[in-house]
Length: 316
Figure 1 (cartoon, one colour):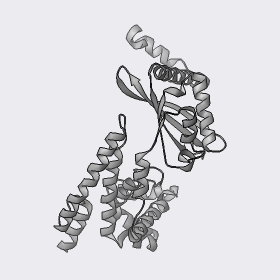
Figure 2 (tube, one colour; figure 1 turned 180 degrees about the horizontal axis):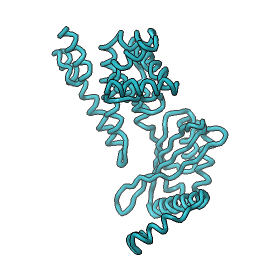
Figure 3 (spheres, helix red, strand yellow; figure 1 turned 90 degrees about the vertical axis):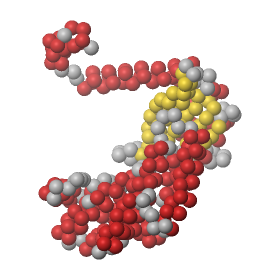
Figure 4 (cartoon, one colour; figure 1 turned 90 degrees about the horizontal axis):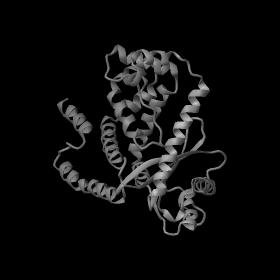
C-alpha cells in the first residue's frame, strides 16, 4: 500500500523499521478478531445457518475443536471458518456444548436460527442421551443432525481382507522404520538423489487423515526399487520380504486407495451438501458393475498399477 501511494523509496524505509514480536502478534490477533467479527455479523444477518465441527489432536497432543459455519449472503450459500478452541481438559459433549453456549452468548447468536449440525460418528457427538447433537436439539428443537459422509467412507475403506491388511501393515512398518529415524531419513534421501529418482522422501502414515493411505502407498510403490536396495544395504531382511513378496497385491492396494482418494477429494470443498454427496457416492457405486464386466474380460484399465505389473509378469 505504501509503495503504491508514496513510492518505492518510502516502502524501503518502512521495511527498515524493525517490529517486535509482541507488535506482530498483536496485529495478527487484531486482524483475526476483525475477520471473526465480519463472519459473525454475516451470520446474524442471515435468517438461518448451519455448523460443522470436528475435534482433532495436534502435534502437542492437545485437542482442538474446529467449527465451520454455512449461511446465506445475498441469496448464495457461504462457508466460513468460525472457531478454533482448545479443549483443555476432557473432550466430552458437555465440554463442547459449553464452548458453543459461550459463543452464542458472547456474539448474540440465536439458537432458533440454527438449522443444521454436522459431526463425526463418535459417541461424544451422536450419543442418544448425552451426545452433542442431543444437547443442541434441546436448545434448537428444529435443528437437523447429520453424520459426516467422509467419516463413514473412511471407516468402510479400513476394512481389508486379512492378506491385504497384512501387506498394508507391513508396508507401513517399512515407512516408519525410515521416517522414525532422522539418520535413516537423511541416508535414504541422499541414496535416492544419487540414483536420480523422481522422489527422495517417503510420506508419513497416519490413520487419522483420509488421504494418507493412498498417498503413502503410491509413494512407496514409486520408490520400491530404491527401498529394496537401501534395505539390502541396511540388512533389514524382514522389511525386504514385505516389500517384494506380493507385487500384485501391492499394486492392487495402490490402485484401490488411489480410487478412494479421488472419491474423498470430490466429497470435500465448499458448496458440498447432502444431495451432491449422495449423487457422487451413487455414481461411484454404479461404476462397480462396469468394472466387474471389465475384469471378467481381462481388462484392468481402471487398475493401472496392477495392469502394468501383470503385463511385466506375462512378458517374463
